Image 1 (cartoon, rainbow, N blue to C red):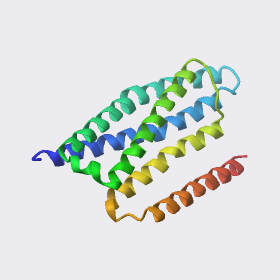
Image 2: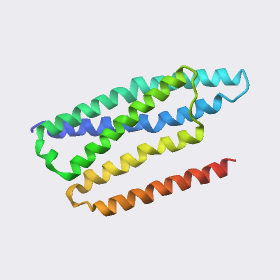
Image 3: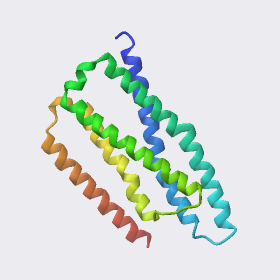
Image 4: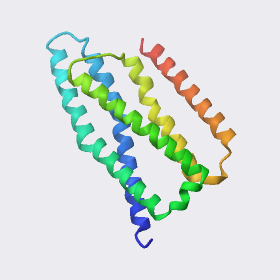
Length: 177
């Protein structure tokens, strides 16, 4: 337990860098997808540049950060196994599981884009980008409030947050057009 604060600090640092990558990669996907409809030579120049940026972000920052965040998080649970008996931790681990699924799906989207396969619109990617926001907000409230959290208030708050995000995305779309 002497090193617990160091482990916790490293966990937080890598969670932050993991989320930074998860917040930025869909934005690069949007730019890549929108560049695909540009005329040549702009199309090739932009898509090549975004491909380099996406791969560096993903493989140099996001993947290593995810692995280290999970490793240090697991280490903390090993040091404090009683957390696994607490509702807030079970809920947090559920959101971490969703985050890992999101991460893996994002990886597959990147692989498709690298292969020249564009299945999603830039509007879809704008919504996809907000999934990490929902997970982040959920996890932060769970960790900070722990067992003092009102599950009803958290659920209502998340529904309002998600609704607000969707309204803002629609407003942005109108503003952009």
